[in-house]
Image 1 (cartoon, one colour):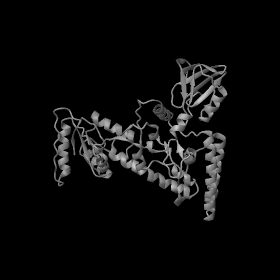
Image 2 (cartoon, rainbow, N blue to C red):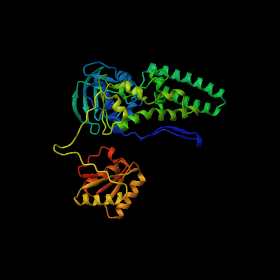
Image 3 (cartoon, rainbow, N blue to C red):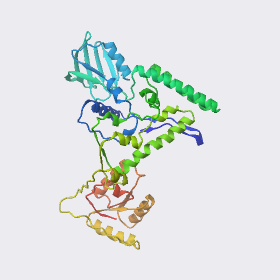
Image 4 (cartoon, helix red, strand yellow):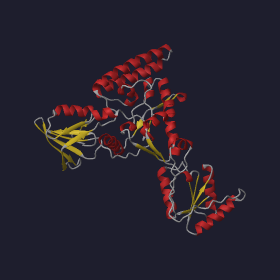
Length: 423
């Protein structure tokens, strides 16, 4: 769950950023980026969030800690590096992105792993590395080396962090001059208080809430430069497969403008510095520049897909011997009575029906009418929760009802062998 921060000037309402991170999903995100940097045989399934800022892949790789059996490492220095990678020391609750030390034995669970590592020192030399079960502590296997990736994708080398803090301070002073010159003292006080608090947090802890809003300074990017994203973690010859491209491509188009509008309001009213505008998703042009080979998949491709495709491949998925279904066009007059006759004929054979309408209200009204006439019908549209939609489709296939009424049923890629009529 993620609620971005926002400000509504009309009601003077500030909505704080709120996020609930699913630990397993976060682990899988780290596992995906770690795999991309370490191997070639990787398939990543991503949503449109892949065009949002993720931190530099170079920093992520450079700051990872690799320990090898037989090599010498200063234990205190390793512990310091783990803290810089935002790992927490916890002797009791041993969980992901934490470590504990018992004598010369270091145990750590990397951010991208389910298992932990036990690293044993003899003097300054790593004597043994083993994989352990975090719950029982039992050793599972010996290893020649262990790589520990950062606990967050937003990691910055110390030297660059110092430069970033200076840059943020300079930007704050410039912004304060602008706001005071315009007589906007409330906004000036607000941005000064918020930014100084964040600077102090970053000096003392290495991070602060909403640190991604300072990503331009932390990455050393110039104003307006695109952020690092998941796409930058891939090698140059990667393949992009865009599923349901007729919906995904417009979604990618719209992300930048929606984000920009929200951030401009935050900047104008003193909640964020202007550099926060560069913590943004990629524009569509930037997305196109980062992808090379692409396969756009859609049953109903739009103009963009047809325009950019070098070759269009039609994939007919149909058992051998079956012909395309017949299409009949019926007059508008008496269409409901005709529909009822068709429904009774098809459902009498134990088969199912999809009925499409123009609006959600029409879908609900038609469903109510059919139910009154004794037809086992239900409706499906965007106001129904995702999990409930799956349940409704399952009930249709199981025969708990016979007719499903909706507005976009033919665009959803539904695979329902039991359906023999679409009206």
